[in-house]
Length: 383
Image 1 (cartoon, rainbow, N blue to C red):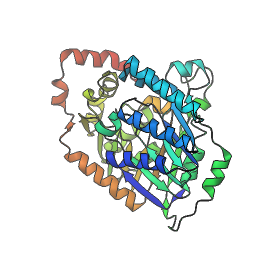
Image 2: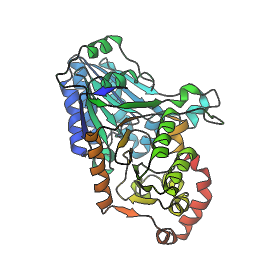
Image 3: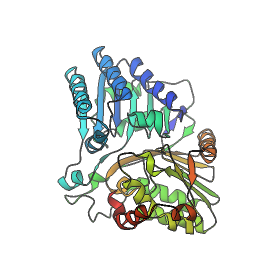
Image 4: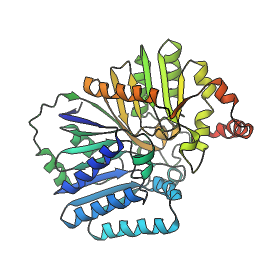
């Protein structure tokens, strides 16, 4: 079980962005960063410029982007903007940085959206940023996101896992990280859950795959152990069946369950993800679960059980998180992390952008949307 000497919650969007840039600008030896995609808006421009400047002053920069995720993110950009992004990544690569795009081994994995969804940023000072945010305006000016800045032994654990999500690590950098010492006690106990299902599958990829996913299993354990409350956030709540069953089971045995996810307007490019979530609304409401849609967008991934156990990271409640994407979560019983998570959910309950789903809400949906939900929702696993 890894520990931390420092854990700073990064719920405020400006705080996280400032923390990310400060780490890059202060790095002297190495800087590693993984993300699902980069949008070449003002955030992508600023981040890549900072990485290029760091590389030119002698920092070994390593950037890992998911290939499928970047292709999805590309729909948000014009052709000229995409070309500018490619040119900037080439410039970074030519300056000596490692710029890699992860894709799974097998053809069907790649065609069906296999990839890596873990977001880690780490430098030689012994600090890591871990959470839900991509490098895009949506993550820093639109949606809710949650990350943490950590120090202590857990940083090495996060750094080593960079390999499991398709990245490469210089062993000298691991040794440099081992040399970092802290005057603060490592008294924050954490669990780190990581699974890359692509590495466990054969040439048929997720088709027919019935393997175990540690992250899914651990969250099921959290839900099965709940006695009083479960509160969670996800981009769109459309979980694999084992998680849905565990959550409904908790509600039916008297646990108060609240789910916060995104409104259909939060993702302008398509409403398919919302449809995949909304197909289960009656099932959730029948179990007594409170479901809220955030009009601005809820992209954080937090699970809080009984106000005594919290997990957070990259895992969306969706089939892809279980059988196609590398995902990771940190979990802890530490009271300091619990207090902040509790305050986040208290804030979400008061947030005027959150609209509670009800039977009346479902009846008020436009007729064509109801039809699409009934027809397209059957293919939830792939949306």
